[in-house]
Image (cartoon, rainbow, N blue to C red):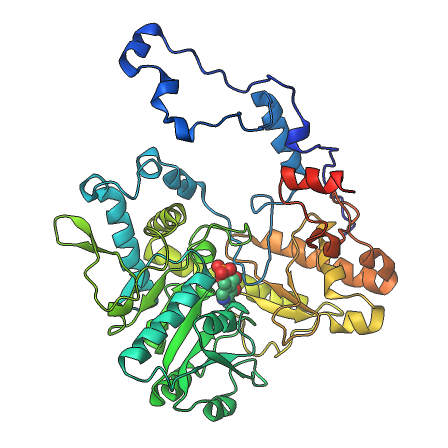
Length: 511
Ligand SMILES: Cc1ncc(COP(=O)(O)O)c(C=O)c1O
């Protein structure tokens, strides 16, 4: 397999360098005299203090110039609509366009959170029922939709732990949150932000929580444990009931990082496993891509007894109308303005409604099947090893190590990932979880057919062969993309990074 992929390469200026003074994309017609008579002089309607002295410096282009500019840029990019996007721990699934249609619906995205409740019954109903469905899916009592991301949900979860231990008069003693060494970095960060000390427990030879180490780590200081199940190796923690017992016996709470919920949708529920607090990454499992950098939504579900602490307002229903309920004296308060990232939540609503209970189960089944297909096929490729073995099936993702390629051919995970781009594929997540050396973390999701998975496996097989025949070729990749190897340090260094046109002008003027 030689790659026949060639990405378009345009010498495309940035939009501020295009166009001409006075060029317009849309001409607003002058107000007719008789309309003026009704609305008055528009300029006079705008309060003087908010009028700009000078017009903003916007690019001046015709509509077709704008369209061509962005189409050319899109041709130098990769997207979920082009092919496999195997970023591990990101669940980059195809997002059905019907979800976007709902999120774009005028009746929903033109309303304002300050509108009277009676005029926004529709959106309140959607959010109310979405919360109910997510509670059913996770096996929890009540769900709060407010957090704007997974990490934000984690922060809320750890703040709920504080509120719970405070109510029991134990907050002073319960200072520690236990986190396994395979956890996502946001877990210890959230625990620390909520004022806890982080205690790390190692994994055992199966890639699961080391039970003996956990028993040694717990004490009357334990506020809780944060656990991802299936974990970041794609392995299901089969001792979850024992883990729950150990934590509950010392009075701690069990927190479920539900970022990997895709793997168990409709099959198993965190609430039934003994978890007390659960977060969900809507922008992974329910129809919004994660890798786009936001916005997201990280709702939190809690078991009975913890719901009094959830943020306000809660959306309630009295059988006739939906309303905002602020009367929750034990609530920790607000975690975010208004009611969450509504567009993302609307997409989740459409996604769940269009798939139904059976469809959600199928999501889990196919995503697990796809991950195991890749795990099995790739384990046969020279230089790729699957730590923790093939005996235990993977769930939604698999983590390979290319340590052998590094040791024998000086080809690292980064080089393999970059060379994949030359085949018109997106790279997997690299160097995570940190317990695997030279890690490539692959999550195919349910939305790619066997032919696409085979194309990916074939490309990696070819890269393995190239690593033995011509490692330089792999190390110097990519060559078929619009831009070859980036200077990653320069790209993210504050001295060279220019995040806006203004910043760019400043930086280039001072050079
Ligand atoms: C296991 C796990 N936990 C937490 C998060 C954090 O989610 P977010 O990026 O939405 O903050 C992620 C992100 O992918 C994750 O994979």
